[in-house]
Length: 97
Image (cartoon, rainbow, N blue to C red; front, side, top):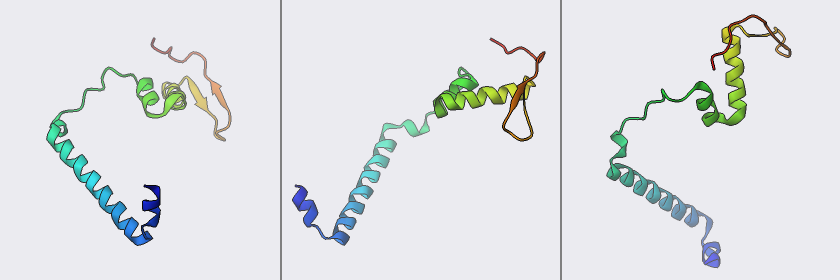
């Protein structure tokens, strides 16, 4: 089987490959239309916290960025002008549990 693929000239292989990709995309589109899920509404995201959404979108690094952003917005954390050092401002509002 591998020898058969190796024996196909380059331009012919590209045309066959392009045809197979187009066929796969067409089948995918037909199945997507056939199962009827394209008209279903998205589920509400009201049950997820900002940290949960950040974790789903980018892992623990995104959670850390989201927490820092929330702390800056609440006035609990201040980022210096040079962007290298941070300092915590005491007495800011306490985070909700």
